[in-house]
Amino acid sequence: MADSGLPHRPKPEETPEAAAAPAAEGAGGPSKNALKKAAKEKAKAEKAAQRAAQEKAQAAAQTADDTAKDLYGKIPKTEDAVPVTRVKELSEDLYEKEVTVVARVDNARVQSAKLAFLMLREQGTKIQAVVAAAEPISRQMVKWTGGLSVNTIVQVTGIVKKPGVPVSSATLSNLELHIRKVYVIAEAAQMLPMQVKDAERPPPEGADEGQLDSEGTPLVTLKTRLDNRVLDLQTETSQAITWISSGVAQLFAEYMIKSGSRWISTPKIAGAASEGGSNVFEIKYFKRNAYLTQSPQLYKQMCIAGDMENVFEIAPVFRAEDSNTHRHLTEFTGLDFEKTFRHHYHEVLEFAEDLLVFILSELKVRYKDQIAVIQKSYPKAGDFRLPKNGKALRLKYMEGLALLKEAGVDVSEQERFENDFTTAMEKQLGQIIREKYDTDFYVLDKFPMSVRPFYTKADPEDPTFSNSYDFFMRGEEIMSGAQRINDVKELEDSMRAKGLDPNQEGFEDYLSAFRQGCPPHAGGGLGLNRIVMFFLGLPNVRQATLFPRDPQRLRP
Ligand code: AMO
Image (tube, rainbow, N blue to C red; front, side, top):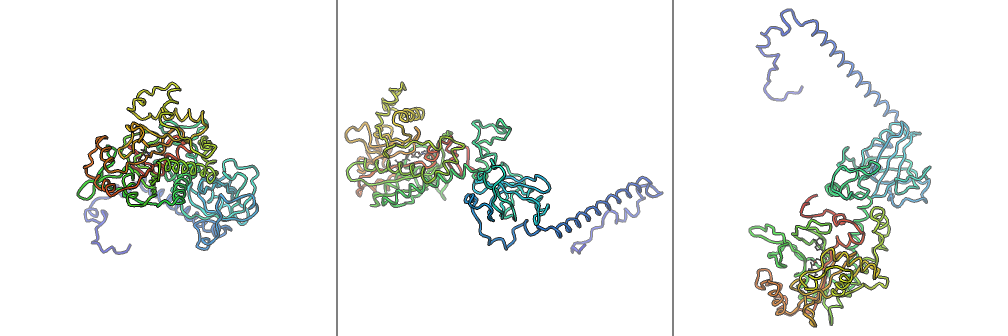
């Protein structure tokens, strides 16, 4: 033992007391039994050491004569440069060709001493790989490959073959990779909190953990999936859904930019809760309090006052609503726009209707592969109905109300303009419109002034109503918008009528934007998460949100 530099501490048997003490076993020395036991222990230890040495020698010999020792294991530097083919690009054209892929191990199993299977998964696309012991592939390589832990990222080189029978559990069921080399790029922990393959099917309706399907396979609840979102994102369905979300944002930006709109970024921290209402998050801001913005509403209008004419934003929107429903989040992605018009707010309404028709019809074309994947779990994903003539169906609020009344719905509160439609009414109206007009996307225009925010312009012909509109998909709201009041006097009166004080902190900058003159304008705010959810017919908005935030959830 190396000198530790610490003062020597005598072991118990080295102390003077120990030297003076009589031997524990009595004056005649250790008993026969004790001697026998000690001899037995010694023999056992010798045997174990012998066995370990033998195993070590055997392993060394095996490695020495392992014909495949360079064909598997940790990835060698030389393999880094090998060109890689994407799994989803593999096809029957590559039969008998050698390819290299990088993928996760979805499943690994040893069939026999000479045969093992890997299911490989790259962004949800699966292909089966086989490793069989035959020169130069060794039994050791087969055993090692079949023992890889699930989710490990591997680089596999192999020959593309046609399997004897199609591999029904693989996405590429008519292809099989016959492994030549397999190297580990990043190893996964042995125990994962959730199996990605168990999350491939939709979650059960109830929240109870431990549910099994009729074949005894675990059903993973939405809560477990969201708790382990990184694993959940690896499923084929989540991969496809996240592509649709990306597509909605891209198509929104594409349409806006094509129309000459400017991409803006407005603050999410504000000094006052100026949009009113209690659904605002208060935060600590150095020595004072601040608020997270509930929408870019006031700022997008201030940009119009700043002569920007046509603006849009894609950004988080915060709502401190304790709503625990399938469609409410406390943070969502808002797609907002604001635009000037010349003669009538319908110029902007039409612009927004064409925007939605563009997004929804382009999604169907550009993301048809992803939609087909999602449809396997959520059959409604592929059946979103758009108006045949490419023009949005637009009804007046009162026409919608009449359709509900005709269907026997009690709309007396709505007729008295006391309340907006309830969620149940909106859904029923969606059904009626689908049957009558064969579309899942429609617009209601001219809402009662009483149910809209202070910045909404009243209908000059009948001020009971307003120049405001909501957009619906499958009977649920995805957008709100309106012509805005652009005259400062009218704006202050409207604030007072809604019980707001124009002199309240936070309104001065907004109001002064109008004092120096602001052109007529209108706009709207869309919820990206809801568009994805309703387009695909998903049961819950959390499935259309990367890392959802709701009153119960602040992680991951
Ligand atoms: P509104 O409050 O109606 O309007 O919001 C606009 C759109 O945002 C989405 N949305 C939500 N999505 C998920 N969870 C929520 N809690 C949630 N709340 C709203 C919906 C909704 O249609 N300033 C106005 C817009 C405007 O007039 O331009 C506004 O924010 O899809």
